[in-house]
Image 1 (cartoon, one colour):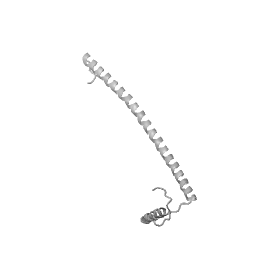
Image 2 (spheres, rainbow, N blue to C red):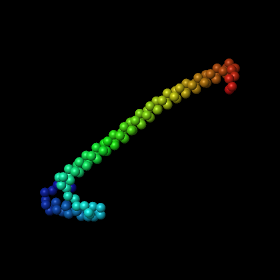
Image 3 (spheres, one colour):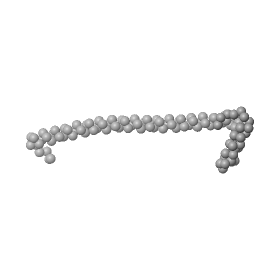
Image 4 (cartoon, rainbow, N blue to C red):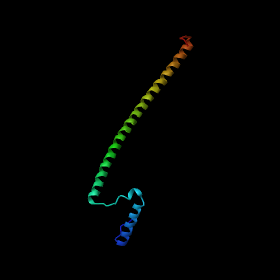
Length: 108
């Protein structure tokens, strides 16, 4: 809705707004009146809520970053273990081939 200096249009808009309010049962008991003090109270409440939400998001972000760091560290450790396991497997195969070719019997 745009600003108008026409008093009749302004009155019509106000009456439409009030009718809209009264069509909602949860708003019928409230008369909307904005004073400078109530507006400042609204702003103060909004600023407090915004600060709270920013703090909550900051905490959540730190937890996510810590979890991501843990995942990356674990992935690197798993990669190292896989390489070691692969090398150990190769060593075992080489040893088995050496034993098989030399006639070694070590319980296999």
